[in-house]
Length: 262
Image (cartoon, rainbow, N blue to C red):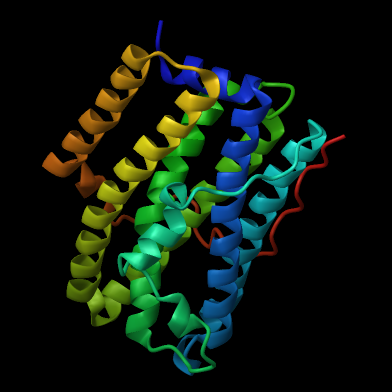
């Protein structure tokens, strides 16, 4: 039976597809680490208390990149080049979602509106990351090879999502509510399209590596298109709602250490 679990099992069981999966994930996490580090360094004076949380966010992302690289090293694999059509983070940036790398590369203070944009972008992408990791956790939390990594990253992504909710609500109460909702909507509608395109590209690469039949590839592509149709018809709204999280001050401390992989 074709299921998310069976597809992931195929990808994880093959060295070439596993290396591509981990390389794509590690690249995205490392980019996120750099972005958060730059944002923390450029936070406006009025929001300096937020800087340690942004730094923690970036440290978590860097840690996730190291975890994916460690998983490859454990199997004696080297990272592989990431096909540009599978680079979710860079495609978001190229489509004007979040803060541009050109802006972050300058030593100019960000504005409060820039921080609202950053948090709105993060609220959308962390929703995706949290859901993806919950899916992996459901099926692989007890896996002897990747279980610890999945649990660690899943916990971190849930913390990141909670942090975005809490901080965006703080800005909404301070009078930025309309700007937040406008930015969230634009980010969500762009993200679901880019996620669809990246998912199709990743599955095409995996299909070639794993020798999937045309029929199997077509079924998987249809599933991705169906998910996009659901999200376009209204599923995107889950990415823009805001509520006070149960995990308060989720990024209020130092980042936890990455698990060791023998």
